Length: 135
Image 1 (cartoon, one colour):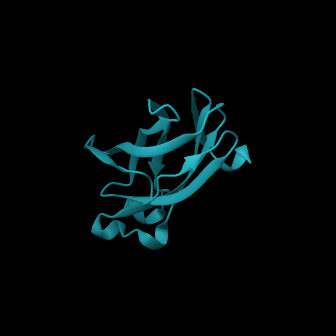
Image 2 (image 1 turned 45 degrees about the vertical axis):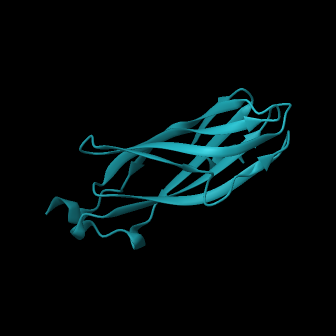
Image 3 (image 1 turned 120 degrees about the vertical axis):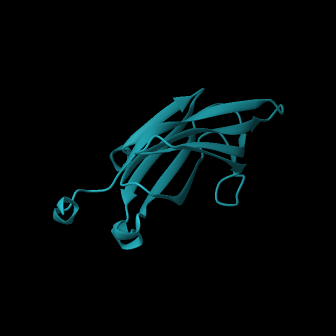
């Protein structure tokens, strides 16, 4: 399973794994649009139940432009993870450059109501080079 996910980070027993893929069928380089899909798996390896409450993303494009995205939950959900459970979801990221990166953190609530900030690993967004790029 671990070989499916290229990137991983662990915080206080919670592991966040990321697999990312470029989607050429959703990209339009001639119009300055590139699109990636990413699959996230969050594994609760701690000894307490945790509820994912918020997310924070730092998305950087090839020009160095940084976009911060904050929101509740992930894809409309705020999953509760018991010890040993995991949660998977898939989302996407458009950019106006063929390269960039993403990283961030989730904020979970512990059973006692205290927050836990869990790191999302840095991962690159890179469109494959094609012969058409050299025109």
